[in-house]
Length: 245
Ligand SMILES: [Zn+2]
Image 1 (cartoon, rainbow, N blue to C red):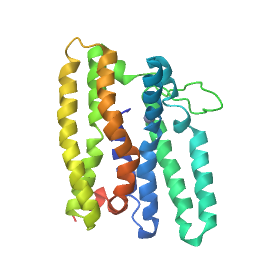
Image 2 (cartoon, rainbow, N blue to C red):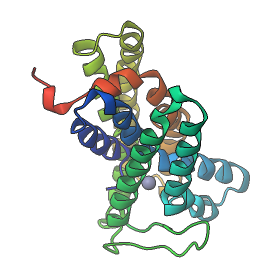
Image 3 (cartoon, helix red, strand yellow):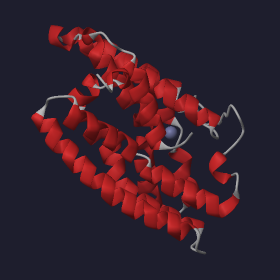
Image 4 (cartoon, rainbow, N blue to C red):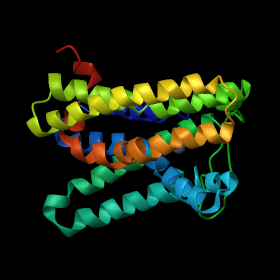
């Protein structure tokens, strides 16, 4: 379960079970933590731009940000911040939830190929299944998988758009949600073309570049940072359990 959208969906589902208002910062933490490990793809993209070598670019992915070191560091930072000022007390709870979000991300990634869970101490990679599902059916399915992965973030954008415009009453976030809706439509079109291209004889590497050029520029900053900050009230209000109520 590599896909970013599924990591985010999992975060939103887990967050929905946090019902007490005083714990709502934990909802934000779980959702944000569920996607933050993949920010290391930014490093992969930068390495690729400088070296043109896909192998060294993918080496950093699924290492430090996906491991126990990152989880511990997050909690340590959260605990320290929570001690500095009384109005930052929530930071500890937030960091625990954030680290838990990372743990769920790493768990799903361990089901789908391997993760260097002890990086930066050792870069030995572990897997719970030994399967790389994206590779199971050959090159074409790998290309389709990547295109779907790129598109999958729209699950998150559309969910937040729905919640902001139909449930939560926060006009600033509603305005941002409308932009997410437009981005979602553009993304569906772009990655739709990528799915079609997957069935042509375009090389895996060129297809990957086309997918990550758009995803890295638009979705990576949105999913891992911008939406998390801009839509935080909506995220803290969100619940699948109240979707009808
Ligand atoms: Zn990941």
